[in-house]
Length: 95
Image (cartoon, rainbow, N blue to C red; front, top):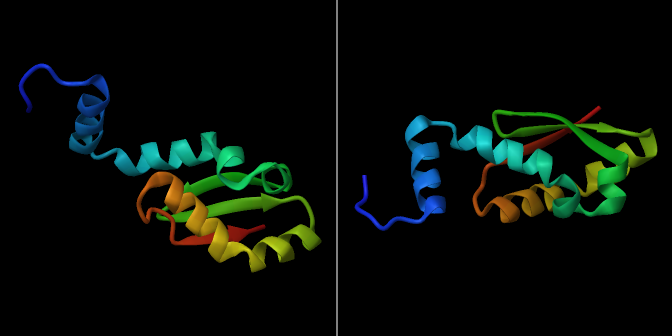
């Protein structure tokens, strides 16, 4: 543990790491900030159902959008990981 003064944000990061919930916090952040990460058109057509083990499960509005997003999969993964500042997402699955 660090000595005072310590910023609240650094203390929270340390606690999250110590408690082993960093991955869950990252996933919650992605769900909460999905529109900011991928933009309005994509976020309106594809909603996150869940995130597990580095995989985002997206519920997509239509077959046409599913195909379009399939071709953008690599870019979407990069956007999410760039937002998080680490490689937390390895795959996106569409349904």
